[in-house]
Image (tube, rainbow over all chains, first blue to last red):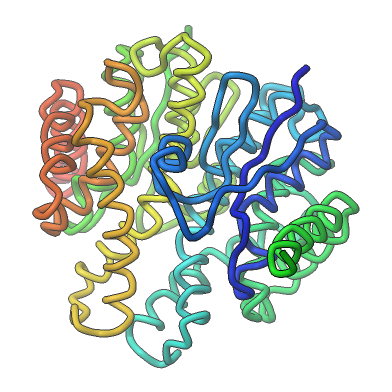
Length: 215
Length: 215
């Protein structure tokens, strides 16, 4: 088996470090114990080769033999097919995992990312627009709280790629203290990010960008 | 084969008609020629059975034998596995389709839906928050325009579930005249929505909600 190659930026500013989406792919690779190496693409100069691999000029992408995969959510689903550590075998469980993966990307990240970006930009929290985004996010978090109050994982009694992604999406909300009213969501993120595979992935991303500072 | 059952609301207000997400599932079922029937769940009373099938209390969900699938994006991926009309057989093409499906849900819908909701809410377009969301969306549309200026479909030379979903996501932008500066995106949506399967799906959704008005 040829090694998987994960490509991320050579450098990013301080702000997004720890949130760049190669992290969730590193995390999945570590959970699965799949061999991989990390390569860099220029943050400042995004040329035709970058756009050929990632149509939006973003990161990450994964190279698996002669296949290149973009979108971190798609990469996670691709990796999940390679490892029982990420995906159960039972067909009903597999369908449920797929549902929660898409829920993380579309139902939860969709309000969570604008909410976090508004905080990052320092927009006033009282504006009608900020209030709208906050209410949108809260509607989702209330439902996630109800789900997670009753169980430790989203599907069955084990950690899956659905938990990895949902926890990573909720982590960006937690970073701006958006889970204080949602103790089950907060505890869920805390449990997920205490896993050795996350700790290694986080440390590796921080070291990757710090090395670029030193270079 | 037992018929697939698509569940949507019994009624919705005028505003979202034509955009409720059972439409993209109807569309996929029509493209694939899969037998299905539509059932209703109460828009006004969302009880435990609704939340058991759809954890966010939304629609649609699909019942396939003893499996229930929520999230329209997950339903589309599930259906794509049942029909070559939606998903190519070549492994590289399949991976590319998966990438574009996730791109539609997370890279494009993520700014498109807040942008469309801000328009729907009538928020002023000059606020810093609206400007931020608009710039976020434009960054994605510029890249989609570059991609679609060069080809008619996202993957290979044929329509796939990736086009169905991307066109449906861009359609909500078009509805608020957000594609006027993006002629390739606009033409792409026009081509997709001229397909007989879309026309039938749209007409069927409108008739479903109109029947509730009359009842």
